[in-house]
Length: 399
Ligand code: GP9
Ligand code: MN
Image (spheres, rainbow, N blue to C red):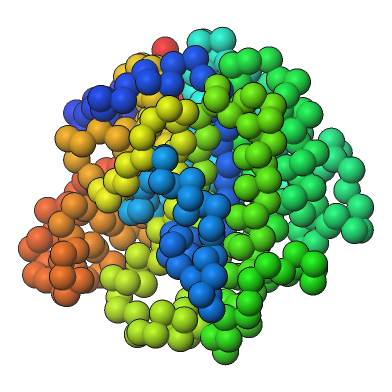
């Protein structure tokens, strides 16, 4: 009911989600190119296998970008679709199933619709079939103008692996479409090659075997390395086309690639036993935001995928206060860092709550529950009001 909507809106107002940073509006009028790094976890950034960097291109890009090294994925069963949903809508995903599949008929106020008010055209690019995760229907609900899916690409046996068209061919074939878009645009690219079980053709293997004794982990490093190389090519094409200077590029991982059953391989690779808070920290995904002309800066404060939408909107100089959203501008220094994962775990500036235990973030040691307990109510409310909005289709009452 409208009353329920008003309660949720009052909660969002009380918790002050609209703190702005000094960077508000620095990218006004620029295009946005958001790239979803499939299954890419933060821990690969800056690391090496047999002396070779796993992500040489991303490592160099970070030097002149905003880089967030403590952003956690907040996805649940909807995997990529949950991540995308947060980027576009800044609501939590559902605790089970995918919002795309379960709630495509809801009213939404998503990124494409918000940016359309400033004259932006919006497009999503993805090499898999349009019906996967019910994207076609969901994108209509979010207000996307274009969806370039499998039918828009020349997909052959030779240029495909695992789930479909390889990232290299996908990005290359996307360029003409991207160039043809009306500017300014908001575009979203969903990569595909770095997906479990991490299969590559021989010619695409650019990194030595890590020899962890766990094949999935060894292959993971190689598909991440391949993805990195294809991104480098894409950036070169962006530069050639002239789009680079006029676009904000956001790169972010959608969810973990290595599940708990393969942690042995990560422990062998890192040469250490993972503590409980370190296991939670494996749920971090890289977030890199490149704004042309801006100096590089690394931000260590914790954040989540739910924060992507307000962070981008603020860079573009869009006031987010009229739009219901649970995230915050990650560039705002004086924000209250509070990351709620979909299973109820959470991370604050000082503590981590996971496996029903409380940990001190500075020491990674278990600490008294009294330091985590004060956040339980806020955690519950975040998830409660977001669920209420989705299950009650409450955005239809928003102005
Ligand atoms: C498939 C892509 C990958 O279209 O979204 O699927 P997921 O990571 O969600 O399993
Ligand atoms: Mn995914």
